Image (cartoon, rainbow, N blue to C red; front, side):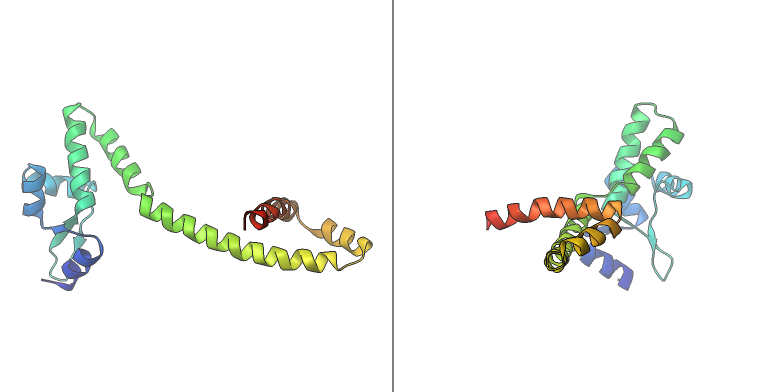
Length: 155
């Protein structure tokens, strides 16, 4: 087994060669080849140039076959496949949410420090600092100020 196959089995689950995928999707190898040449399927290639398909490719094949049963034109099927590939999955959205939450926590800490520094200034200096903040910064500061008391009360 090539390292590509081993790597993909560890990270993504099952991988299939063209014949295996064709059997699972109940279509011919030639049809898999046709969809690959059209760009509907995007297999990974091993160092020996074998094509390896994954579960996503199997799902796409099943979707294509359902669309064909509905007599959907190939151009519309291509658009559906493109949209499916570009749509973030739940795992990607979870990772993105986690990243945003971490950045928000960091910003909250920075804002707390900034607020205490601003509050230590005279009223005139506070006014000058606040005027220099951008509209976006002011909006963010306002939002965080609204959130901070809530979080403190909650704890």
